[in-house]
Length: 165
Image 1 (cartoon, rainbow, N blue to C red):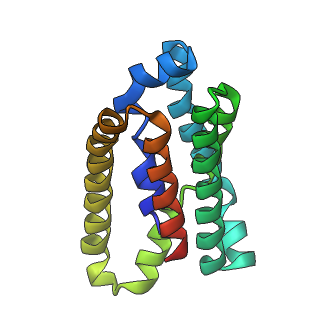
Image 2 (cartoon, rainbow, N blue to C red):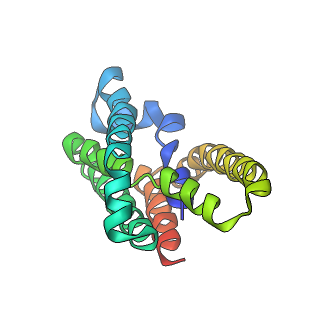
């Protein structure tokens, strides 16, 4: 379930120059894309226990995945139309749709206590591999298509695929 959030997290980084040129934004405006996602994902843990108790893990995983997909789509639209505020709002939603805490809860409920460290390590290693892959693929897609939007359509497709699983 975390694949969409993990995959799309780093794709702006390798394309910083291209995004800045396309949207006519400064370095600090570009860095706000990462800050907005990080700050919004810091807010979520304060409400997780309440939401989990009231709604259940499965519902919260689906909701978080949907919020991440919506954020990915808003970021895509913002890039497409060179609309900075829309892109920033998309990144904020992507942070709110970060399912890492729910994934940890799921890991703890699925695996026996003797395997939790192993499962958590694999989950963390897989996330780092996916981020590396997306950071490598994004410039290749851009260089092939010379179109930023195509890169972020892939991000959105991965978010939808993850939501569907």
